[in-house]
Length: 383
Ligand SMILES: C[S@@+](CC[C@H](N)C(=O)[O-])C[C@H]1O[C@@H](n2cnc3c(N)ncnc32)[C@H](O)[C@@H]1O
Image (tube, rainbow, N blue to C red; front, side):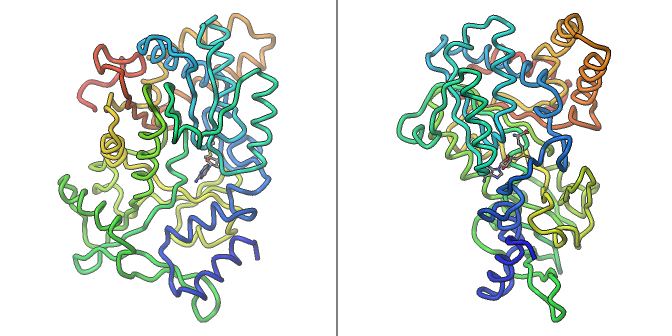
């Protein structure tokens, strides 16, 4: 039995059935034995899934241009802090810095890095990488007392925050709890809503015109509200850029997704079956889509101005991905390197792959007009 499973069993023995969100929080974040606290590198080719920063540094180089534009619009404040949530080993920050340097941007010389990362192994790698690249590090908690000008980035971070699973039974929302059955196996049982935050999210869906069907299963993630409030406290002026898989509420909870979006990953194999979270606990990623309507509301409630939502592909094209491709292609040293670059760009733009991710932009002190370059290619008719 893994340490995460042991901790979950102890928690159920103590409290009785626990909300799925508590199960997910322990499976992913149990100190030392959770999926995201263990030594193994997760979002890499050798891991369980591949994120855009780990796919190719051209992703960070494109985001560098968005950071540079935000910095220019704010009057080039010094220092300019990159506050990154779910920073991993700092791969995105280092690629962004390298992109700024390749563009000869003066922002490279005033960038400071405040990484938020649960995993001590990744943090040690990040510190070594930042040191080698001459990137000054800041303690993100220090920003609570002294908010900074900068850019906040969260790439595939919010989807890892605990999701509460709700099912509609007899016209009523019931929250999925997890217990151990007679044979010791985990089983799901519907129960009362675990708290007012879940009830409030459901009320917000109702107020937004989302109709939930009998038998429907869905996830809500009140933790996004607390995260947005923290970002609101830490950012004196600047840009918030959230990149993740998800959709506005109308699509996320609509007729096509009556079974919810909970998914697990292990060894690059996705498994959305209902019992998947209960296997290989602490060794398997558990995730659910991000509700970008709820995210936008949380950012607005935190006092940030919403600048827009677009797809990752549109964002990257706006940031000059094609020009970056051409420039890098001219400088590749081998056919293998050229192919790796081209295939990465294809995956980043493919709407069925990373290009279909959502990008939500908010800010403080940045006017919505003219739109930031990352929002310049938004498909007409979409938010
Ligand atoms: C899917 S990975 C994405 C990593 C990186 N942003 C990337 O795109 O490659 C999620 C990251 O968030 C971190 N993480 C998850 N929950 C966290 C939490 N509550 N606080 C800080 N970091 C967290 C994980 O350890 C992991 O590094």
